[in-house]
Amino acid sequence: MKEKTILKLKLNTDPRWVNIAGKNIEDILVDHAWCEQKAASTGISMIIHYPEKTRLVDELTDLVAEEWSHFERVLLELRKRGFQLGRPRRDDYVVQLLAHVRKGGARERQLMDQLLVSALIEARSCERFKLLWQHIADEELSKFYYELMVSEAAHFVSYVDLAKEYCDPVVVEERLQELLKIEGEIVTNLPVRDDRIH
Image (cartoon, rainbow, N blue to C red):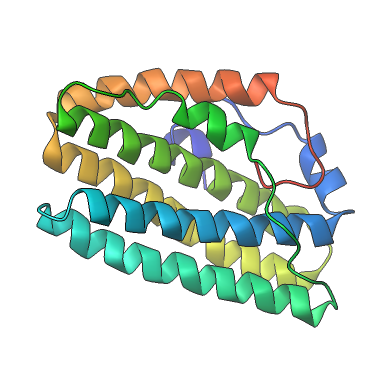
């Protein structure tokens, strides 16, 4: 998968990340579980706020179910290895991205930003899962992360398509490029953590 073509990311993950993450798999799995829970919650929140948008409700209902199944699967991987779920931790990457969702103004503009930020989170997760698939020593987890990599790529596409469904596609593409630049700057400025997906 060529991330910069499919996912449009401006910056690849620091190659040191997968090396240190592979040595801290318990924390990575705990953080990953909470990422899946938050992704499901985000989808539910958008359904609640935009119930009149039929396609969004239908597609995000499926996405929420898939994200929750991922949460359950990560829990299973934790339990197989004798680990506990642990408490959620602040995700500075996501917090900084969400700060760029514009408040006020047209309702559709805010929805567009929410959808595009969600798309970028999925894209970055996909890119990280690819690294884990390719480099992690645990063969069972490697296969697991391949499956999730494919799923996250599809979620990225779904979120962008939904944004273009409800807003001018030209405007969506322009805003996506702005947010991609911002996302790359956030990744550049965050420390390389061995216990986080993002």
